[in-house]
Length: 112
Image 1 (spheres, helix red, strand yellow):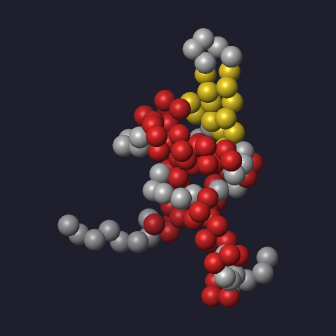
Image 2: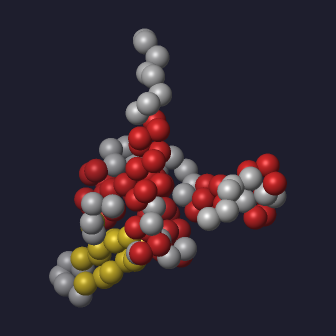
């Protein structure tokens, strides 16, 4: 793996820019965090992500599906059951989120 030279990459070929465009918005990484525990139904995600709107969750999941991060499986049942699951590409975000979590826990919380 070659060393990363952030200052040398342009906006068009910068992995950080691409990452941020794929996981855009404040809910994106939290949705991935929830899916790292395994397949989840839409209602389970809504309950786990207190404050997210159905509209926002739907949009993020569709975007993830478009980019191959999430699969959406519809089961022919009454009522229909839809399950979302991370793909292999989505699972590759596990160490990224773990590193973010580890780093954030080292940053002191300011006294209120």
